[in-house]
Image (cartoon, rainbow, N blue to C red; front, side, top):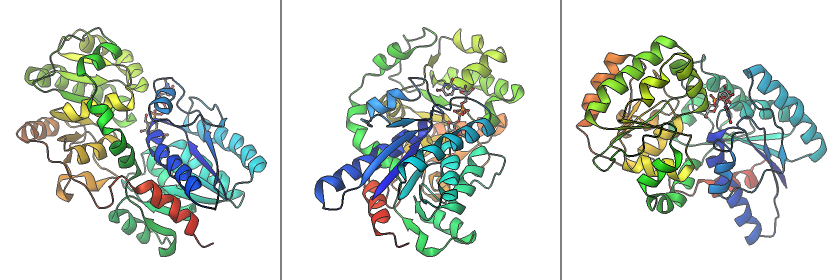
Length: 381
Ligand code: UD1
């Protein structure tokens, strides 16, 4: 059997690492050999957004890089499709495996199906219900086309059934990101917080004492960072209110750096001694900060999931989530606060009264990748 798996952007790397390892384990143990080729579309290309993760998670270098880089959605998807079609015609795989919900996920699943190649989607069935999110479009199209839908939780099965997916194409495997979290936890725990700050500072504020707790912030969604009024209100709240309770540590996404500078907000943050602005962090560094944080304020889906397993109280700066299993009402740690400052303030005050409550949803057990490989091998056409 020949499999091509695809990565494009940062959140894909922690999902593909355990999958590749599970293929290697399968190949070492059994008679049936799986030939595997990794394709990187090149959507994320900065060392800190890409290469650092390959190194930290021991992902073998991608055999093929499509080098699509930055651009509008249509440019990224179109260029990926054109380049990926050539790869498929040359390599003729039995399966294309895509993960998550980024532009690579959509582009490569469509290209494969047009060439009648089977598609497997790892992390299928998540739905925010918000079609204005680019990721929701990617999820809907990819799942509609996939032959094998590998879901992280039972809520996702319901979503797929509602859309008419065939029951035989859905397999509940658990959350593959948690495989990566579990196998890297000990290494992350051994890192020094001070070293993380001094090695990644963007603003030179690295003498802050984090021992008494800090707020960990990440923001990158267009809905939060592309609108001047919204981003200004969030920055005001962080810089003027949160910092009176505790320091803020904020690894800043490249899109957000651009927007903060464009809206004249960068100096407000970088001149505040209680705000530590960092480059995008490596996997272990981010995990270490999450483990030590008193509260996480984020619009990242993956971070919501990691907070659930680690127990870090989490305010999700979105109005909806495709990951409802991470919400408090479903046993998780996260509260949806959107980007309305009054709501953020109220939930922030509530959350500060809480302590860490780790939760482990069903099959988030660190063994998802082997179930993914098994599901592919057992799939009946
Ligand atoms: C993408 C994903 C999103 C994911 C996020 C994690 C889609 C639709 N979105 O969004 O789901 O949560 O990655 O990071 O696929 N840039 C750099 N260096 C890089 C990559 C990007 O400077 O290595 C800049 C780009 O020029 C662009 C901005 O960052 O201005 C955004 O990058 P882009 O790849 O378009 O999407 P993300 O917002 O990162």
